[in-house]
Length: 142
Image 1 (cartoon, rainbow, N blue to C red):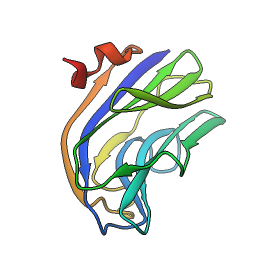
Image 2 (cartoon, rainbow, N blue to C red):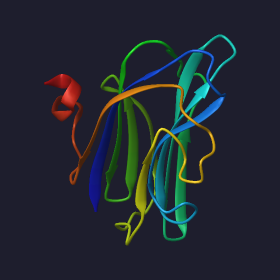
Image 3 (tube, rainbow, N blue to C red):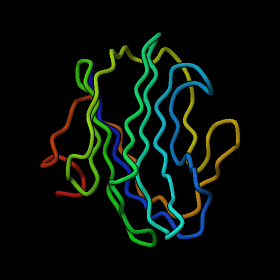
């Protein structure tokens, strides 16, 4: 099972420390979350999370910082039990997570489904592709 979720977004300075800007799946069950963590000096780092069945994986590293107030391309790629994150086409993190397609759910943009951790910024595009894309296939590289 594989898929890629790409987002072109601009996190603004002075937002909440934790912001959930994209959630797909269930509120607390199987889900994909894409989140930012803001630092006191208005930089951000990515927190990507997948839960599938009894397995889950969070990919987060507070040393991989990016400036707020600028447009960024993000991608989460899941491919046969492996999850990778990319910012501006550059590979950041990877981890193992067995994945089976979600059986239901919804999508929430700009906030977690339970209406907490609102995003401050702008989202230009979201693209979901039912295959594992490489950086040369990301929308930002076209």
